[in-house]
Image 1 (cartoon, rainbow, N blue to C red):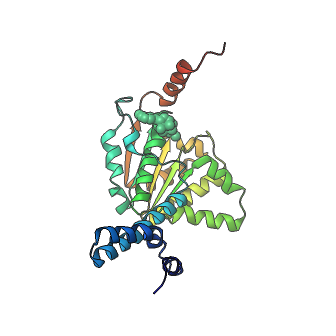
Image 2: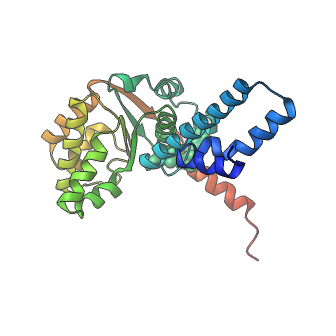
Length: 255
Ligand SMILES: Nc1ncnc2c1ncn2[C@@H]1O[C@H](COP(=O)(O)OP(=O)(O)O)[C@@H](O)[C@H]1O
Ligand SMILES: [Mg+2]
């Protein structure tokens, strides 16, 4: 018979680290309660399954490049009562991912557009979808200075996942020509393969042509984006300013 240490080593060699991690507890539990062997065995297998599932989830979260785990539960719907709450929860069901639907979240700064987009994206990672989150301007700039080989790889990470979030599109009023072409390629590719995009922007779509510097390009991009899209308008006051004001009033005086 193997010793406990040998069993643990064997479990790790067999890549059953979930069972190895709780082995001691399970052994003691079984001895203390005299539970039937099959009960212990199934508990051990469940440990392995749980561990694998949480590792996969962690991996998907990392791959998404989301910078925070936001949820709709942290959102205060009373703050901006005009927000399309129903439509946000509808997005959160992730039904739109099944047929490659898109969502455009357009509106005033600080009203929670990124929050909602990130919450939907995070939920999608938990549900097993591959997600890629990008801050549009930062990513366009990064793409522009990458080598052709890196660009091909980046392009794959924008087009392959089930969901792409383009956060704060046209934050800079004018995007470089190459970025416009990149946006067009990504939107076309994803449209062709029925893969979803969630865009957030402070800019109304009527002005996109101006920011792209090309009306025709804007039209072809919007055509595909809006073909199967939920339009969410975020009107209201900035939560950021409220937070800043709260900090000012609670900050110790500088005297
Ligand atoms: N109604 C809200 N309830 C709770 N937090 C909010 C709400 N609206 C915005 N926030 C928070 O305020 C900050 C700014 O929101 P954000 O989603 O980045 O705005 P936007 O992308 O529309 O500019 C974020 O930290 C976000 O979590
Ligand atoms: Mg934002």
